[in-house]
Image (cartoon, rainbow, N blue to C red; front, side, top):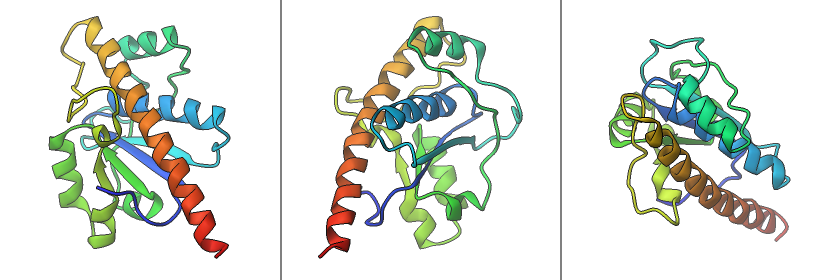
Length: 171
C-alpha cells in the first residue's frame, strides 16, 4: 500500500496491549527521526486492548531496548476514535490488530491511514511482528530486529514522501 499523498507529520504504532511491540516501535522510530532531522514527525503508540493503561513498556522489552541504546519511554493506552483524525499513518503490528483498526476506522480516510508495519521491512520477509509477551527473551530481541528494519524502511519512505510533497508544492 502506498503512503498517503500528503506529508506525514504523525505516526501511531498499534499492537494488542501497548506494552511490547508498539511502544518499542515508537521509541525506535523517534530515535531515527531525531538523528535524521525529522524530529517534527510525532510518534505515539496505542493498543487495541486497554487493560494495561498507564503501564510502562514491559521490563523485558525495556531491558532489550536499553541494550540497544533506546530510552524505552511511554505509557500504555488504548486506541481512541480521535486517533484516526490526529494521526496521518497508523501502523498495525499484526493482522489481528490491523483487522480491529479497520473495523474502528470511522470513514474511508481513516481506513486509508491503516497499514501493516511489516510493509516497510526491507531485510526481513515477515508479514507480522510477533508478540513476544509469552515467549523467551530472544523473542524481544527478534521483535527489535524487525522494528529497526521496518522503521528504517519507513524513514526512507517518509523522506521520499516529504521531498515529493515539497517538490509538488513548489511546482
